[in-house]
Length: 424
Image (cartoon, rainbow, N blue to C red; front, side, top):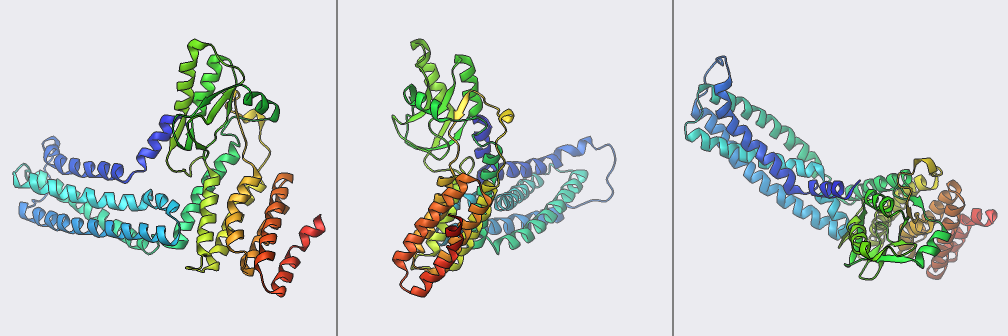
């Protein structure tokens, strides 16, 4: 997606945006009930007194204010629980949870609808037909509130729990990984060693701020490459840490002096840099967060090896997609003048397993599961994945041998390692 599409996506994920839209919808619904009655050509059956509608609106206004305040306190507690028991990096996913945002937005919208309805009702702006319309809309709002409350109750039983938060991290990582498998180099051309060497000796556009690359506007870079008739080599991909004088992109040769400032500005604008990494275009970050969850579970204060084993299963499931990925289709490349370094299997497996292998070095149950998971990935993957899995298995084995004190545990671990030895 383009930079503006990405910015719009980030904007719509904020709670206040959805709450403001649904709140405005509630206000409009209350006002339209007074305006629309003059355009209804027929007489509605029955009459609704102002006191009857006002009493219902009073109940909605008072209850929705209390429910919204309670829900906000529950959200705050869930965020704190996720921060302390899972990882602070996962809290952002909870804050962007659509169910929570829709529930709070519905409560706020219902509160505003009732308040505006009461105010307009007190002014006498509603006629007989207007009060009937307001009554029907109020019944619809009550039904919406009941359905939302039932959904909210079910959601609260899982919000902030370790398993539910880990599920969200896995889902975000899966989306980023599938997108990267579909477009291995963000839709660009895989960077080859000869061009990498030439670009390193060429002209580089450097960052002007400190942070992490969150998004790269490949379409803008492709348009620039066509305009200046020169291929562009990415030096920083999503997840990379940048600082002043660190290269963002390189050209094989320096452009004309009069075009330098415009090219630099265009390339810098194509890179969205923030203070924290994002899950969207960065599957390595998702794997690192999952590994951090498993590592935290192995800390002496928590001592929950079951969660670490669960995380090992999750990262193995995710990386199995990478291991079985199809070969990239050269004809499907969208940006043929932008060269992007591909993801390395070594980096992915290191992000997924290194922390847990280090912190669980003295736990035989964790080490056994790591060895089995790495062997499974090596059996499913190509040469690169198999070599990366073997390296991680060897490092995990070395850490375990240094930390395990019981010879029987070491023997069990060596028995699990036997397929690696046979394959060698």
